[in-house]
Length: 354
Image 1 (cartoon, rainbow, N blue to C red):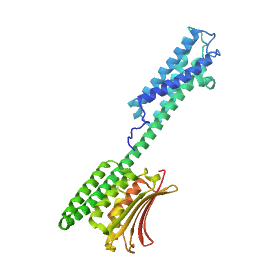
Image 2 (cartoon, rainbow, N blue to C red; image 1 turned 45 degrees about the horizontal axis):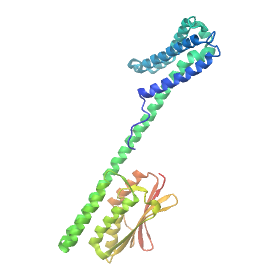
Image 3 (cartoon, rainbow, N blue to C red; image 1 turned 180 degrees about the vertical axis):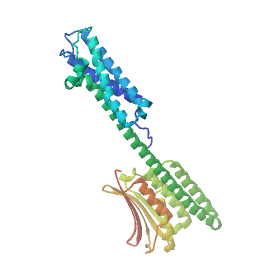
């Protein structure tokens, strides 16, 4: 999952977006209420100006709340004291807000609110406009910050897990590539003494194959069409070595050519078919590589003529391949090796839409 830059990281910018938006909505509602003379004794610009100044004060008082909640002193307190401050401080500031309203109400022809003590007696009635905004602000401040923290931790965990999977896949790939290179160099070594011209052609084909794999060095996933091109080069190298003893065919349905699979996932399957197939059938084998789709499943099939030994075991290459599949498609793939109609068939079945 790259890039992993979190869109949920709590920042100054996100705070100001919520702060301004919240107070804008509350102010809009307050001005609507003003027209009903709940706060004013008459209509006109003067009482509206008074309401505006009162709302600006409320805006500034919530910034004071934020400064307290962000302070190092507050964060070092025991939880019980932090909760106490989160309950008492909004109430204290809301009462100061009432006091300010009473002080400016004669100047701006506004209805005087209750006294501080009256405010306690009429707490329920006054909650929406006096105490409510501060408690609501406190609730959203801690709620949104906690949510962002939760999401950010989740993204960080997913990032760490993805990076671990990426490292594992890279390690498995690098285990496979030297394995193939070792076998290819052994083939070239044998050809040098038998047919130098063929050895040169093999080296050329090998360099083209390695160049093709290097193109996808930083890509763990490639399209089926790209995988086919690489396997074609690989088989052409083996064809030079085994000549008429090796025949092969590659086929892909049109609807799977753009489907992405782990890079070089079929190479160890083809290598395994050649290694074991020719060992048991000295006269030669035919290898079929096919990519096709059945309903919601994408199927990779590699088959070779011959029989499966009862005591066969998975080697390093096949074990690495299965682990790569498990990293890419956890719980959504099936990897089988069996015998059908005198052919050893290896199938990788992947649930599409992952």
